[in-house]
Image (cartoon, rainbow, N blue to C red; front, side, top):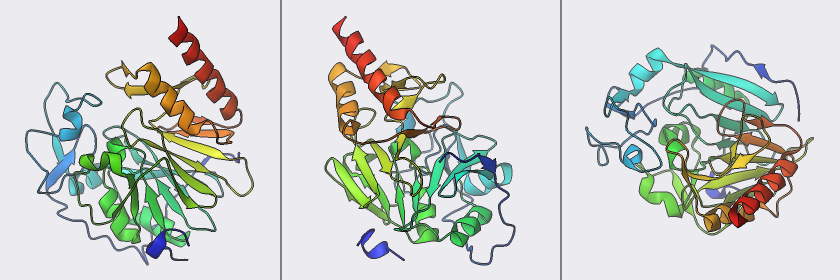
Length: 300
């Protein structure tokens, strides 16, 4: 059925959760936790084969950047000493996971509960026993799906602890800097993980950039955009970019491609890559208006 051999089995008020302090089932065994192999700028962890002390390949790309102070690395153990994981509940089926204080890019991941298998959407560069314990108490994770290379971060450790595959579009496999053991590379335009959950390849930001479309039980369908589409601060516009930090736009045709990949899907809620990028209701209207605004700009 879903998740192949790995299968094991609203608009509510957002609230911050107190993670459990008992770790009955949580057993972390981090690979080389004292090695400084996590990039401080983008949060990507490197295997020994990919690591170079003076160079993060992800940050050297035009879609990222190297800080003026130069390349800096941190170990998992140091990161865990200085940071923790914070969780917010959006509904009975949706939980937001972030690092506190913010680290590297500051993106969030989402734990999506479903009777057809729980999903982790995107990833963060830290994993702790309290968050593992919480997720295990809610049925674990049966699949991990990541939008694009900037959020690969610590995906191998998340995959190992939950014995879950990581779904990444094959067009971005060159950007995997850690172990590929738990990765399932998929191809084509879409990948239906379940009857209610579909990965959609938009391209644009990266060739393999992906969004996730999910139908919750008691609410309207939602779109998780990663960095394929960026929800503006006023929540009235969606932007598609080649590089967000360096303000490099996409070509007209690539922008059209991103919107075209999503256009046939019904959705009302939008969840972006960063905390606060939540649009409850009206997401489809914002999507259509943004597309028309782009088309108007392209013509003039």
